[in-house]
Image (cartoon, rainbow, N blue to C red):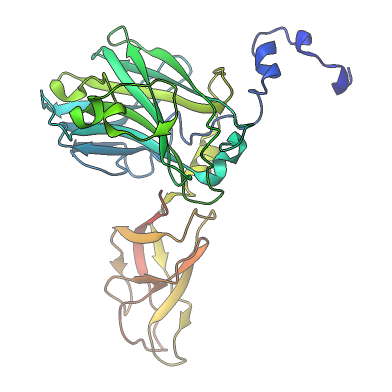
Length: 360
């Protein structure tokens, strides 16, 4: 049958519905979120004693905690059918009552240039749907908030969802209206934050929830009704299958290969394998600092910062910590910290691991 003759009624397995075809919600690379199945965790798979901000475990997702309990965060081997991993919050030190400014948020920041298909800031802007699987012993009301980053205005849109059955995977679907006022800049900055609230003091929850309304951010309206996950050390919260897509219907989760997810995550963070630094160029013909270039396997979002995750072991005629410079999105130099080097010696450092970060 020629492609021009294929119509919606010829699809009979219910994988793709006529409604999904009509609203253009089915197409390649539907999911605007990276690592939504939490398969990639370059840094580590578990961190205990988390009380503050940072990228702790799974790639592309960040935690922001302000005096709202202590948690172990982990990439856990759990999930509904079709998922082998999730992200888990496990409360280890409780805070039964939150102070006004306290909060606990789990979120991903999406690069602005990846959101241009939304058409925000114009009459043709598209609605978007957030779907995910969630499980907790702590039933009740939770807040999922979308907030624009470097747009013309920092508007946000908060909606509530309910965990109804304790310790049971539930799929949640929330549709957010088109944003016809605020333009998302076409750059490598913060386009949109997908916030999952897990605790909110009165500064963030004492107002009025205006579900599915984009408005300039009013702090007190952001997380109205949010339960406090930190009120007991028995509490845990697990999430997987996070998908944000164009349209007002949730399609099945877009499972990408592990290699594809890892490649996309490396645009923002890369932990190298252990390697040996062999300098190949010197500042002078006979003496100077040994220097070489490191080339990233992917083009990064921005010129990165570089730190040493695992220290290098000293090699022949060389000791100390290497220096880094001339950062750009594709490469940087690694240079000896020694001030001079003989042209008659070989130099190397063994088995170092670098953290290369261009996170939003």
